[in-house]
Image (cartoon, rainbow, N blue to C red; front, side, top):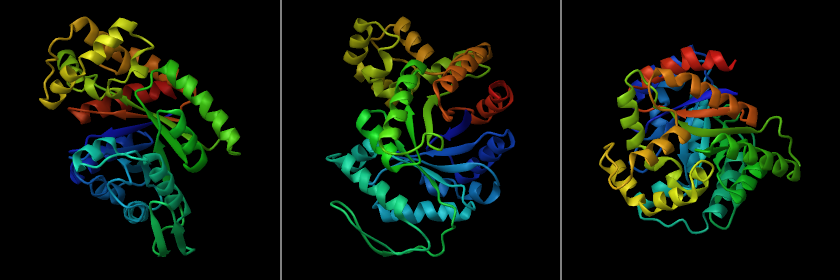
Length: 336
């Protein structure tokens, strides 16, 4: 299992280049640039890193056809791939957060994503593309300037329907906030879907988004984890059911607005929710605490590896240099 690093959505191209070269020097696999409706452009963010790096994969996470026509996604993706000499990747998503910012609905988003994946996977610098779908059309598209080495195309998939779509059309899938027990079940189902689609699981990539907060200052780490807790599976029941009691899950769902308020205000103070429950959530669905928690993080990562992940995408937050250094110097060597 390899390690990717996810940079936050406000990272500048200069910062991304510096952090990305750290990732490359530590021997990690790649860098993702987070993309939300309020982000810097994720393709532009990675442009300097594409030029200055030589080995790592790099790409935006996630881009949805609700925000860009698949042809424009293709232009940006293949340009990044050309700039990096064939090292680009992308995660296509359903566009939940972007839809809200743009005031758009997500009606029939699975069909739209299917057509987006068909277009991206069908593009070649050597053949003219003509595509007529229900939602998107492309006529006379042939990027002769594109490199022959195609980019890796992932789909963000946490549910059976989107998982099956990934196994039919994408190079891999990325789940979000799955604990190891859920991940094992999901990967077994993914392999079954690949077999049904007539594909081998040997070259199909499976990753999982996971939050890293561990740092030398344990109190600062916990404050950071509390602030970001709303984003852990967006408090979906399926993510927390493996380790919370049913009444705790119900309480969490009933107080979703309190978690959301803390995130929007960028504060660690989550009103009306007991610390005992918050700490239990943080402990099980992220890596947080002081440096003494690194061994626990390594053991959890080994469980992900045993479950069958080909890579894990670790989201760093405040002080990303410190967090990448810890992962590169203490975590990655222990997983090899």
